[in-house]
Length: 83
Image 1 (tube, one colour):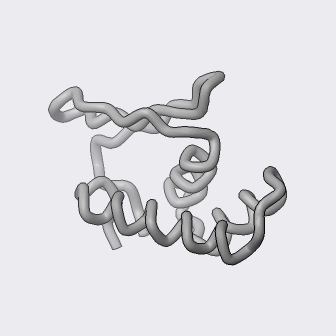
Image 2 (image 1 turned 90 degrees about the vertical axis):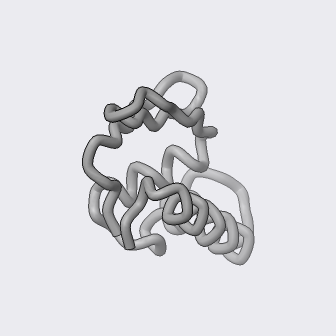
Image 3 (image 1 turned 45 degrees about the vertical axis):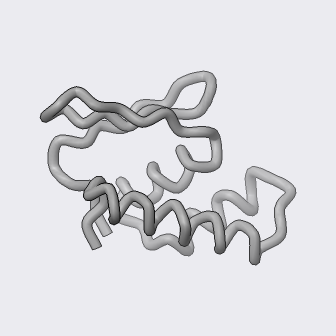
């Protein structure tokens, strides 16, 4: 999976932001979503994002896997992430 061309990721003190450089639209990300997007942008599989979430937060694996799968689905649906 890869972010499509023209999508920039920036971290902030509150999480992160995805910017579509083509039309100027942007999406605010919380800390967990930022971890997922950064892992995917680096070319890692969703499982890497799950592992990073487990290392950063006190959360059950099943919840982390579900959250990563849902965010990944939303990003593909929004044409931000290419399968």
